[in-house]
Image (tube, rainbow, N blue to C red; front, side, top):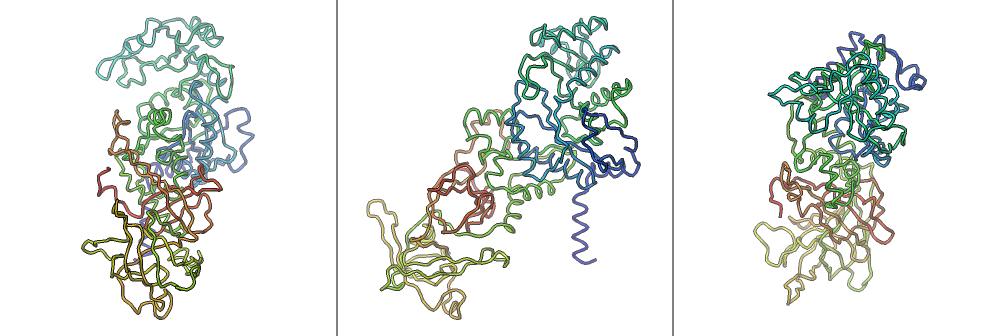
Length: 591
């Protein structure tokens, strides 16, 4: 077997997972042959003929519009949209907006932008749970009429107490045996706004002694006198997510409802509800099936929505798109690429086993992609003036162009020129007054190459007598050693340093970002575990080139950087460091 064949086989194995195996089996057995479209009123009209093909699968990405998406959501987005694409199906974008107190259109817009950024295309399949509220009320009333639901008037504390524990069965509510007529009237009064929040709740009637706590008469409707972002003040009762979600899946003819493992215990209720509603003719078969996979657990970040909200609201970070956050808005602003995120998700795979993924693996995937796609530029982050004393001594303002490749391995990226002048900027750590063992860069008497230009020899330096700080370095150059000429290697050197003309270099602000938390798994006291050096801003110089937004550049020797989409002005360039050239985190202790 040749290497190409072997690599292709390995790639095929990598994308295989238990969910793909299930879908392949379902399609082979023609499980969806008799599906009928029964969603919101215009649902069937929105589908084209190809969508109605029984061989198609339907998945969905169902975010709640009460926060910004993060890297954990990226795994679900790429999985659901990827499966639909690979099997010739469609993926719906559905907003599960069942909680009016926490939802906002700003989250709807940000979710759409993030899904598009990752490559998700839902075409005309955009839906809201709130579009189905009338249908859900009909479903709730059906359950009441068939003695499968009742209005409970216990307090929240009483309900918690009577629910039981993992080792103790629950107790029936004293209101569990209300008549169908009384329950229907109470629910009608709830809908009419006659009761205060929390005064009553509608519960499914299943089994308070079930070993699965989620089947102990779960709440399916609660009273909320709040304005909804989509329906305004039309409703004052709202469905619980666990009640609404399976109904939405069925109405949209979802074939594979794919979610994370924390919903595994909810699956029995998902099936119970759909089976009863289908038996009453409210839903069509075949019904969707729920499948669970392990969520993304990433080191040195928090993916809890509650914790992210706290970080933003208490201003520990600069908003939802702060590049230190694992939000997709923050990832985009930091310069992470969708391709790098996809490579990461493909690499860690899809399984039912929970595991903690080290952040360095995510960064490695970004480096791998960015190395191929990023044009090269020069930046000096810790500037030190170097004066080439014999550089056209009688022409103080002389400038010589040096040819530089935009990408060392990709000729199609083209070339550019950098001006070399008598005074240039170099990195301060490229010079040592007293060189340490093995130091190959500048010190008095040593020779190095100015990358893309000439070999120079250090002749001296200036030092501030009060602070001891080196303020300037002096050198002579060898005119016959210009890169790309016959004499380039006439003098052998071991060091190679980058530089910028002091005359043309552009001042810029550089934000150096690192991991947000010092600890691998931030705990309950996560605020105290914030890395104080997660953001450091410095003033630096960059080459006089055109920089475009949304393009990540490799600043040679320093890593990958992107223009900050929020902070750039006509007067100042601001760059964010995306990732360093290599992982230094696991070999250092945060300061």
